[in-house]
Length: 245
Ligand code: SAM
Image 1 (cartoon, protein in one colour):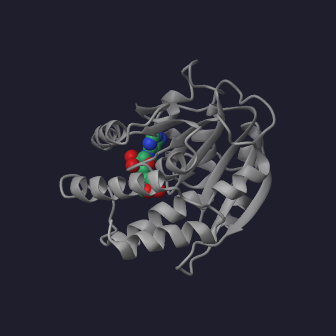
Image 2 (tube, helix red, strand yellow):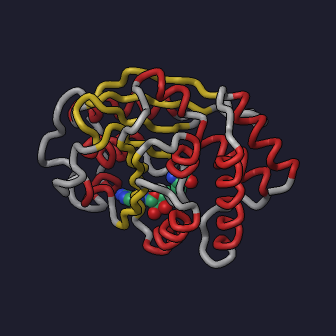
């Protein structure tokens, strides 16, 4: 990583109250290299410069850590990143909080091949890559209601996303969605769905990403009761026919 890029990463993290250690900076640097290499073969990100990747992927991903730790002790927790793509936000969070156990769930096989390779190169412990759709994993007994936190960024509207994520979260755990400025409208439309699926909105946190002036919000939803067994519905249905009431 070039010195200027490294400074952006270190300074940006510090602005969010995170002090990155040498080993972690090395990991981000390797991640950047691999992303750039693989992006020439498969479409992993539309961002072109290292600076953009550092700010809009790395810093954006770790921006939720301080907020989440207000709600739950993150030490050793089990986290699933639903629709992780090239590993966002899950991988930067794992680099920053190595004690978490992370499942990276992604529907597209090609992207999961990248994630497998990344895991090997970074020598990650307690990271598993899951290839398939959230609707299927939400039904499997080894994944249903097994996670302390389900996270997701840029995957679907809140109603659809709740049907992907809430079945995976244990009662007492959290579903955390990273959203842009349409968050209010999404909440209005999806609040009843969230409740139906066992969730309760307990926080809306405005986040600042260093070096850019874009609105970001974290919707923090607590799982307060079991998700009814008929959810999630069949693959594709939550997106085609979102549960709006
Ligand atoms: N979360 C990443 C990010 O913020 O850069 C990727 C965002 S990308 C726009 C959405 C990703 O979600 C795609 O890689 C897509 O294959 C995946 N995806 C969409 N629906 C999914 C589902 N039902 N189950 C698993 N993955 C899904």
